[in-house]
Length: 170
Length: 99
Image (tube, rainbow over all chains, first blue to last red):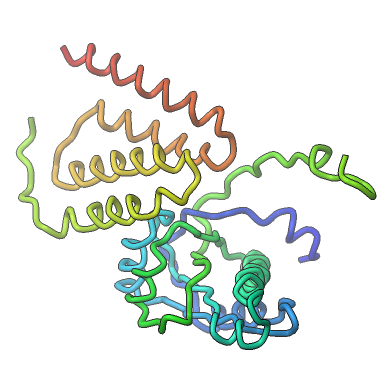
């Protein structure tokens, strides 16, 4: 798939078929994630891949943004201690941005592989840290729920003319 | 009314988790997620009742409306709010039809 096609045809998929996703494929997606750029090459992202249905069910119970039963969840985390160590006070800020850039790579790679995926921000961060045994410096930033799409929604409108300026703002 | 299968704690555990984590998160979330979460609670309660043998045409209608329209919250807030109002009015019709 061409990159621009992938960008423009990717959708947030929230309903999935009852069809398992192979672990190797999930690893490949995460490998695409870590080829994203990161601030000062910090690479403070961390990933927890969850495929056990029981564990997915528990994550869902802590994540009001998950409505269906995904076949896998990639928990995109950041090591905030390492980020501050490498980039000072701005480290936490950049760690979040870097995690988001890795997440976008994962979303596009998933789309390329015929998977559906959706970024979930509505989860209880501290509860999820406890469930996944994450130390306090490893903070979950985003969840990526994955599976084979059961439905593909229409794209929301984009307001290109209203958000783009040349040279200066307005 | 149909006779229902016996309920167990696990039937309600998931929805209790959903309500608690929603309550904990909502203050920092998009305003429309409040109504979305409430709709989802209604949706999940209807699922529990159906899974235990309660067949209700009007609950089914409400659930279909919720499923068909809840994601408007992501794409068109105006339409989502219009849907909420129309669902509230539809409930009146469903009450009247039941009389």
